[in-house]
Picture: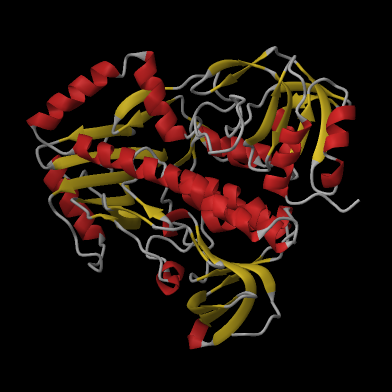
Length: 506
């Protein structure tokens, strides 16, 4: 475990949406990646059912959104604990959730990963790890108990809520225990005449059924104060019995494609990084899947981490850059755990909760309340703790319309290559190019003219368009200059060095 050679830059454990998105981000930035996955093939299980605005923006920033839009359906409403939310078309070019099953998301991401040259090794799971000053040794177990050892600069656990990587690294996973059990399955319900049954509450719990395709429903039952043992087998008969208890009938349930179980346990890794081992997605946080936030948060973890990790392994930035991953993403995870605990409480059966839901629903008619809850679910209002006084600093960059030498388009088109962009909206890049000269190998300087005098920023509203803006590969603003203000070369150079490493010599 003391040798310095490596088989690859990064080993990723887990080929779910988080692991695959991280692998793609690393490859776009020039890092070598091997993904190891316990399953011999994709499960095909439907699991998560949608993508929120911020994740749609991420996919758009990489130029692959059309692949997902072609297989999903945009839904003009969302919900908070089953109470409907409205969406604001001005806040994003992609304001509505996309209804698309996780099985399709994983397939599309794996296809993209293979196009980018990612190695995906299936029927291969992590069995042991060891760290030293030069890298990580990853022992794996494969089919027929064969074993192999991989050597990498870093290991990232994207291997789910029961993460082996997290346990082997000795990272704590504190939180709150489950208070309920929910069962979910894709089944035929010939006795149900409706295509869409939304959270019907009963004295025992609640149930819902959604027809994702003709003849098939996703049915979910939730029962409170019935906490299943984590190792208890999940069966079709168990789902049927649960539906009878909460709905009074099984609607002729038959032909299960997939059955699973979840609960409202909420836990978060106490650190997202321990030396050369990092965590992302469910390996870093689990929670009640209210509002469809889990998959989205995992993909956004990956996009925050990918460019940073690639910069470090390629020697362009110091290892300390990785500390910003925990600093930025851990608070986001805390916020999601907090709001999903609240949503779990709001679905508990009983007259007190019924009254609370009525009061809550009456408050949601106010735009400010609706906006606040909408932002909790979509993450459009996230602001990372980035140094700078400009209101855009730390926030996602709006996809404003631009005119460049290559024609017209949006800001997100500039991020397809997953490289930092220094966007000068004066159209003359003389000053910005001079300041950023030492980073010419890793930062693209682009001159453009904005189509609008103001940009719409979630949680802020209209903000005057900046004179120039430094955009990180994940779409968040590292530095911005106000129109009409004297340009501050020192602040720009500081931002460039902070996020993208030291300037080139000479």
